[in-house]
Length: 219
Image 1: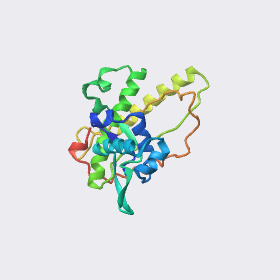
Image 2: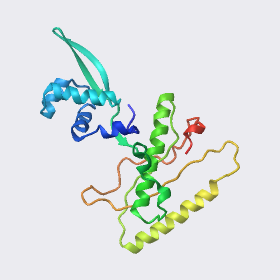
Image 3: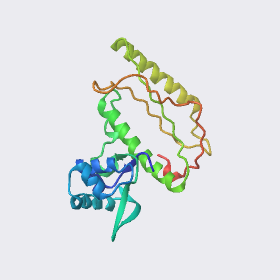
C-alpha cells in the first residue's frame, strides 16, 4: 500500500466526511460491512452505502470474499495505510507559495508544505505504478531554544548554511542534472503535541538515487 496516498480528485476529497474517515481507519485491516457496523454503531445497510461511496472513489477495495451459507460476504480494505488531501483537489483555491513570499510567515510555510503534498504525492503514485523508488530525502528533528534571540540566530545560520550548500552543488549546465526542491521549515510544536527529538532518525548517508525519474516527475 502507498503510505500515504494523496487524494487529488475533488469528488473523493468531498466524500470523506467524519464517518467515512472512521471507516477508512477501521479498514487498515480487512473487514466486512457487518463487522464494521458493530464497530461504528450503524446498520449494515448504511455501512454498505458508505463503503460503496468510498469504493467508487478508489479509497477501498475488495481484499477477499467468503461464503456464509448461501451468502457471499466481501472483506474490504483501505487502498492505503493513510491519506492526505492534495491542494490539487481544490483547484485554483488551493494554497500556492507564489502568492506569499514572506518566508517568516506561517502562510508561506503552509503553502510550501502544501506544494510538497501536491508534487511529491503525484510523483510517488506514479513511481509505485512503475515499481520504482522516488529519490527523496527528509530530515525531522526537534530543538528547544533558550530564547527568541537564539531562535533567530539559528534561523539565520541555517539559511546561510543551506545557501552555501546550494551554491556548492548547483550546476545549471549539467547535461544529466535534475532539478530538486529543498524545503527547510522551523515552527513551534503545538502545546498538545508531545515534544522531543523523534526516535525514528534518518541515516543521512543513505542518499542513493535508484530511480530513473522522467521529465514528467520533475517539479
